[in-house]
Amino acid sequence: MRTKSLCPECKRVIDATVYEENGQVLLKKTCPEHGTFSDVYWSDAALYRKFAQFQHDGTGVANPMTERDKGCP
Image 1: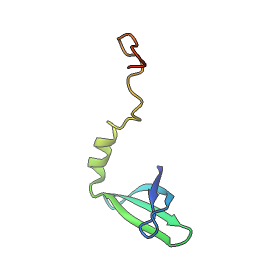
Image 2 (image 1 turned 90 degrees about the vertical axis):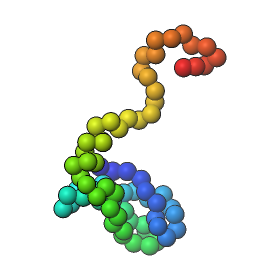
Image 3 (image 1 turned 30 degrees about the vertical axis):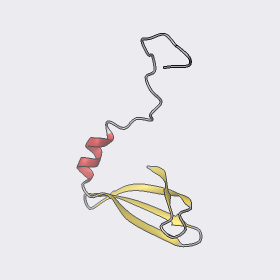
């Protein structure tokens, strides 16, 4: 899975890859200035997959059952 992360040196937003290895979920990222870094994202890959099923994009309810009032909901 592709995502964004921060360079631990300069705090620049950089591309990162989330992947599984040896039962852990790792994050690999490369800063053009400071090189490549790998970090443990989740120490338990099975637990990560369990929680991933509840991931959402945060856009809200697709069909709210209420009238709009001043832009809400």
